[in-house]
Length: 201
Image 1 (cartoon, rainbow, N blue to C red):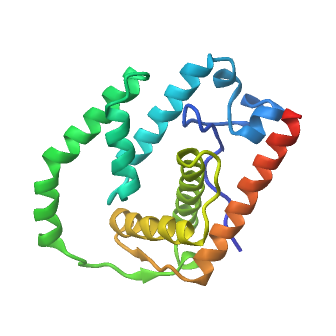
Image 2: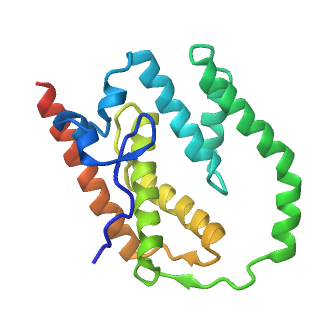
């Protein structure tokens, strides 16, 4: 059985985890807190881009989609704060890439185990679920509301498995169990979107 996520309700604009009372009924379904809901649309858009850049900054390795987004945002004149942040992340990544390659060659896969989702502890499971949900929302944002198809699902899960292997020292197995976790989270995201559309009518 899937474990409860360790963080609170997530605002996709500012990226903060906040208690339920920080969201209105409509905002709860949209994953937008009351504070962000009151902002002008232009500022909401920029904050959401900054939040996406921040999540990408903490990922390793990054997908081609991540790099393309950073490059695109670094040249964006409409959102200067987001552009500056993307430029900073790109600059840091380029300066660190040689050192990272040497470190990976030195340590290799020492001490790693291959684990299925249920073999990770509750906190790691929460992180995995959070990463899946974040990547689903990012996919929808990048593709103008389109949900990930089977190919997109496998791309997301492969990237997450790589991130978990680097972050925890143990590699995550991409199997039927992980696919089922993804499907369950996607189902909830779809339900949130349907509720949002219904509220907008």
